Length: 79
Image 1 (cartoon, rainbow, N blue to C red):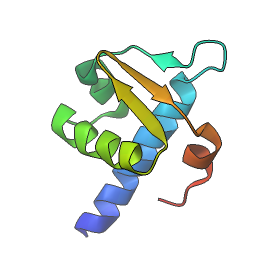
Image 2 (cartoon, one colour):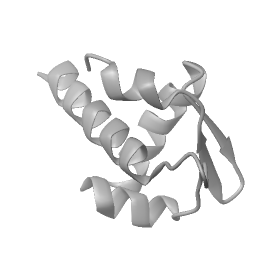
Image 3 (cartoon, rainbow, N blue to C red):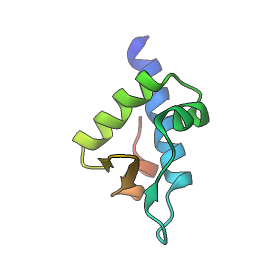
């Protein structure tokens, strides 16, 4: 059940990142708290998902921003 909930959260975070990403401005500059509110989760849960995506090479985390490196893979992944 926990894995199913995590998969759903991964999907929601991935969808939000894909929606906010634009090729013209690849940096997402929302705060973690604001992005968590967009997704509908706690900032701590969002942080775990962002770390997973970073480790998978899908995003790059910098101070104050997120850069989506592989939007197509985020969009197509079967979470």
